[in-house]
Amino acid sequence: MGNMAWWHWIVAGVVLILLELVIPSFTIFWFGLGALVTGMLLLMLPSVALKWQILVFLVSSIAFTVCWFRYFVPRKRIKDLLHDEQAAIGQTGIAASRALIAGEKGRVVFSVPVLGEESWPFIADVPVMTGDRLRVVAVLPADQGDCLLKVEKVGA
Image: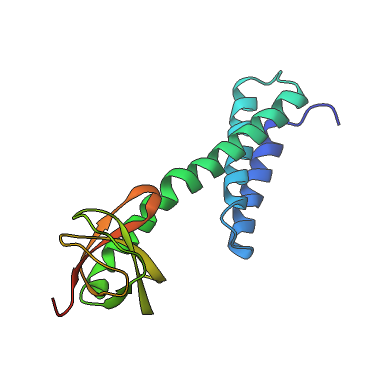
């Protein structure tokens, strides 16, 4: 096969991107972009050997995929969670773990999922014992795309 022409990579990239419309996985798209990058590189440097073309394709495709899932998806999740925070405020649950110091993290469990989950980490301004009934008063962003619920005791 020798070398591939630059337009082979461009066509492959467009086909992969269009294939994403038929098979929605949102990873095929990034390999399509990797093929486009390789085609552009080959257009500028036509003497690049096939092994280097394949390396550029693989590295750029994997880099696009990793960047998407590591940096953009968690930010989107935080945005989605914070957008739905109004639905979470006022929900009540039971403390599954205690938090004896104000600001210490505990875990609250809900009978109906809140923000898509049945349990969340929480903080409170007062000591909370396991089994206390808690009400969500705020949704705070936390590490790695999660959130932290600020709660108050119900009936205290």
